[in-house]
Amino acid sequence: MNETPVSPTSSRSPESPESSVNETLAVDGDRTVLRMERRLGHPPEKVWRAVTDPAHLAQWFPARVEADLRAGGRISFDPGGGHPPTDGVITEFDPPRVIAYTWGDALLRWEARPDGAGTLLILTHTFADRFGAASFAAGWRTCTGMLIQALDGGLVRAPGRAEGLHEELVAKFGLDEGTSEDVAGGWRVRFERQLVRPAERVWAELHPGTAPTPGEAVPAGFTVPGVTPGAVTEVHAPDLLEYGWQHGGRPAGTVRWELAPGTGHGARLVVTQTGPRDLPGARDEALAAWRTRVGDLAKRLLDTAS
Image (cartoon, rainbow, N blue to C red; front, side, top):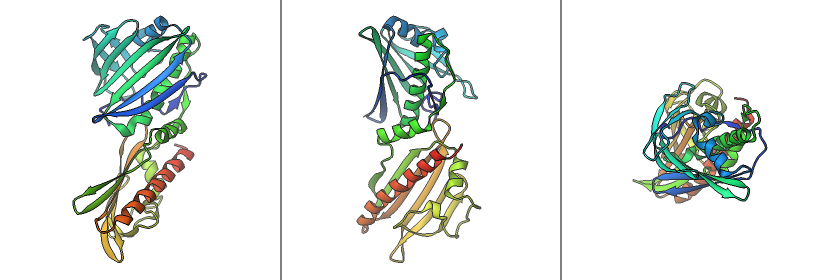
């Protein structure tokens, strides 16, 4: 998931007092738009310096920044932590109000709008990976919390973990809902979910024993009530497990679990189930069952140590 900035997907949250903050998510064609509004008790000119001056950005932004501050100017990001530096372009520059720039395939736009004696800071983050939205929002909540500490002139402290915030945002944005669609010969139910633990930890939660081999029974952790499993057809622990399912004693379709690198420090889970057109009721039952199953897994991972 490298089409969006790496570092804002922090799993940590600010320890400074919360200001008024609100996040919304929208779709613009094949892009997702995260909008965050945060009220700050400092004038726009001071906030502007904090969001544009590399020396100020170093206190709270998730990468070291160098910038030619003008429309069309180059901007570079060095996240550290083994992530390669990347370049972007400043697409909008209207001091002391708006700066926008590209970072990878993402677009970030910061607006410092006067709000009484303070500032309404508006971040608009446009990106391709919809299911990374909760990670991005939690990361930006973290970063702007550190920004508040910097503006207040106090110590900018390393934040604590915030997987709980991530899961709250998953629900808020509706990222826990699956999809159901017609495909050739039948239907497919699909769930994609960013998790807060890496693939190895997720696999161990699903099946703590030795990985099965093709032809063996499906471990219970990969099943749901109402879907009768056949035998495992493909397995590559901890990344993939596929099996056939049956209805009335005959093959009906496949169930496939996939785990890949995701945003932040967790794995990206994709679960799909296919079925025949003559079992439309099974389609609705599968959608409900997998929603519960994936939600329960995310909760258990949240409740366990990393």
